[in-house]
Image (cartoon, rainbow, N blue to C red; front, side, top):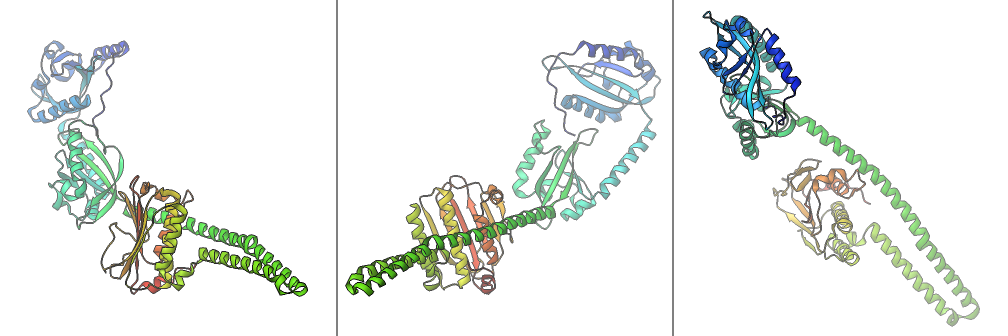
Length: 531
């Protein structure tokens, strides 16, 4: 248990004083007032029945004068409880006037003045069962507690105030891979605390023992723990302090939540994919509606007008001859050429011809040039790949760059951006950790994808010097209707690649994508649907 916080100093109500006077006068127990140092100042008549001494003989003596030598440690522990928590319960043997030891239980509390300073200790002492009965009851309680601990599904760990392990149940053996015999007497920090948390663990233990504010006690927290083989576990931890009696320390129940974390992550990804699928369907329908309206209100109307122009030119040709119709045919041809150019622009939006005819490098350069003209952002493209990629892989990369630059234009407020595509040697990895089909957050980075260290890969990076953002907010983007990063990540997943996002407020944003172009390239690329 944690020390109870000290109540703010306040004056004792008269009613409280009256209740204590009545208790002192009428209680069958030995009610007492004593100094903070342990000298009895006043005792009730119950002292005669309990210890065989009249009140006046007890007053002026010290508690230590009456305690059995074998109970001095328990008495000292109770005094520490009074000093730290303001209250204590102690089971002690006290000396009777007839020469025997009486088993007693004392409950005591500290009384403070209006400035919060301890002025005396009050309490009461009563006789309890003899040692044999007490030991049997204690043994029964201990056996019951031991049975509960040994059969608990959660790991149970107990340490003393030096941080040394003094208890470890079967579930702890199963969870952490260490047997009870191997860990008893060893520092907990060396067994299950990951190295990066060890300094904080030791500092927290020292702070609590010094009476400081506890950050872990009495709460359920989720943290990483270390298995014997070196891998880390996600665990839920509940810790409480053991302060009564001669054994002091801390108890904890530890539950493995690794599978729960995985299930939560899978549910998050599934929800995100459902949102993305719905948004994809909606976007395609919007695109088709837009395309139909664009064709109807633009090229079709204008081509109809061009057709009227040709009809008019033909009529003039029939009635007035070639020279009279020449200007009409020229104007109609010019308008026809303009409409053909407009259709080519529309076709470029839907599917850039350069991607098929001239390759990814030209298509990306055209995309970056148009982006720069529209938004005033300097955006060089650097290509250093040794071979042309499969068409489906080129499509994936082009669409990722297109979506990334769209995000830069909408959100980054950047002055510069850069697109780089390069070969990666086999076995080279991203600077961010990757997990299959998921997005994990650690510090400023987030990564998702599959491991393909045995394949040749190409590495795409899109970076900007804009305002950046807190990546811990990314799980909420889909719920808020922002699908850009989810769309990119899904394309990467389909291509069996990895997607890593790094950003922080004021530090710009960097997207790194690694896509296999070795033996898995064709199979992965066939999954990407052409727009």
